[in-house]
Image (cartoon, rainbow, N blue to C red):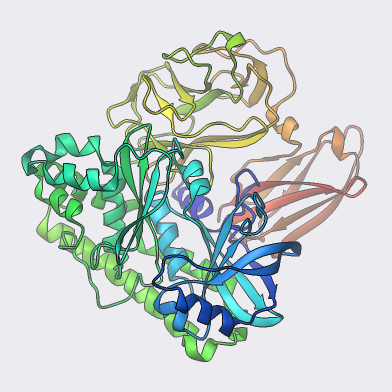
Length: 626
């Protein structure tokens, strides 16, 4: 039986507060487990930067000021800084934008070109923006990451800010099959073209084409122009979040991207300083300003699909207890620092702000559920069809070249992922996802009608070539370091693997087939892995192994040859607080230890193993159940 507590912990880790391994650009900056620190030093003061911004507000072109920046102790010079925003720029606490390559071409920080510093305009809880984006990601919408930072400007403390990822070509590359399309931002004066490499089907072409589609044909023709699944999830979440100043009220404050391989447009959320306020009370079929979504609701097939998706989200994403737990995590992170914010008197009462968000969340869940049950068909329970080890990530090759002889249907030498149905029953992969990113489990969705036959294998090509024949994920595997997740709609992780340093044309395979630990060995494409002569497991490659994981009262730690000598084991919670520490001397014949963790509350933790002689630390996530 699947443990619901573990499902919940998995969702919480992967979408909100878990530190990530430094696999992608921005993983360090957008680590939400602690409050970052940013110091900005420039010859100009904030009043001068504000005047400069306001003078240029309606020009569409903004001047950056040269600055030095220190982020979490890491110094950079020749950085561009400016005030940003609209109404928020008139607040005493100014929103800011950092441009790392404005004055030095190609300069980045943590792989990022730009970083937005939002000051929490009209939000005394100071978590609405981060919460909204996190819920969007949990719903399967590709959107930006966030974290929190203490910000200093010319030595003066400006308070707590929300760090928000920039929607640019790097964001597009990380989230989509191709970054060589066209990105638009919808503002008050229409669509602003941010960049275009493929402009073969413009936003004007899109609107013209959709306007010409008869309503009764929309479900057949719209998928040729729009990623319908993403569109429906985007607007479902806009309704739940009671978002104003956006697509429903004014049809603005969002991005839309033309993805050239699938040749479809995708909506990208933006500007969430005004979600989760009482008073808006959007209904499930709320009329709004976005003409495309209005046409969707008029088509019976698309309307039914929308209502079905709304039901799914109400059951797994928009669950009151789950969201309240996330709010509590943010509160625990921020509450000690918020009283020190120099603008706290103008921001408003922090605790009252949180209480308002909690009340709005409770009201939204209850009101929308009641509306669905009264005005539409009551939602059928979302049943998790997977038992443990029913479907396994059976083998991956993170570096495949022509000499392997393994090619996709188009003849390309793509990296590949093999799944295996370990049962004697066919299993539907509807509502299942693959992802290479713990921060976004819903990266690539399996087709709704896909069935994995009993005791059979399935190949997914990890090459971004989504337009080609076969199953092609919209991401690639990293040869040097990576993670791979197979998950269900409710966030349950069916299987996963974390790896380092893969060899070209060498498989990372479960031995015994479908159930064993991962071994590097000769590839066994669409066949059993039980050929291994290697004795070196993936845990040994990573250099750390804990078991069982998740655990209840006791957990074992396995040592390897690199651990000889004095070691310290530390367990930290997701706020960086040390909750357990012990030292152990590793000698020949002493290759494991059992820890008593019965006094640690259930939750997700980081277990660090540090060799005191080499000063090398390795870390692994540990889930503890109550």
